[in-house]
Image 1: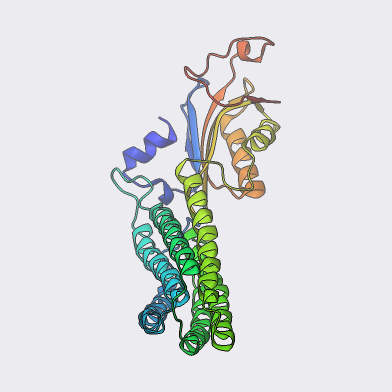
Image 2 (image 1 turned 135 degrees about the vertical axis):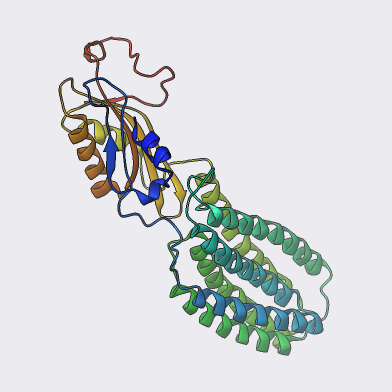
Length: 346
């Protein structure tokens, strides 16, 4: 029985098992093993939600004030800033929901639980950014062509308050768990908001002192550009995870070559490295070891190297003895019916 079969028979999620593996009691093949000790899977269940909640309340209250003043002042820049902050509030709200979902244990058909809830929310947040960026760009261009009257004084006061609000909100979120793509994204967005409010403050000063009303639309374009950048980053990173790409900074070919150099290993193939959620990389591979060598000992060596060099602790390794024919030069590998990916040998 393989490790996966043992875990299913026990009815326990993989994350509850420590570094373990089960092998057949003979010298045949189809040995499996997996290690799950010492994980920190994405959003921690004990993350301090109070800081996120406080930041959400603070931003939500200011959004209402900013939209109201923006309408009264006729300032698109203020309304654009409010739209930017709506996406920040949305990101924080989704992060709070994702934290609760991610804390649920894996059971039934949800073998990883809801670990990817925060990735889904990050993607939704990124798409929202892109949609709002397009809308605000259109409105800004329209106002560049036909600029309306803008109350520079109201814009200056509101933007100044917005800078203070964003500084406080950024401080609150910085004290929460930022290992989550969603929480870190919200933190970065609020920092971007600071630049947006600075641009709005400058536009208000320009309008008040020179009467150049188009400064408001120009500030809106700057904010839209910041939203576009943040949206692209979030969508790109979330898609990398959904499409099972290797974690940023890890080269699967280099990992495969490194693992193949471990004593006792003759070949590594069907190697997969992906990310379940932020901070939760996973790896699976088919490992062939020298005939007569101890599969358990080789598996332990591989797991130790993955843990120490690549911080990958969630592994599923199918460890088999290599047939003599596999070791022959120019032989045909028959270990896998459907082999895929690069083959790494000593």
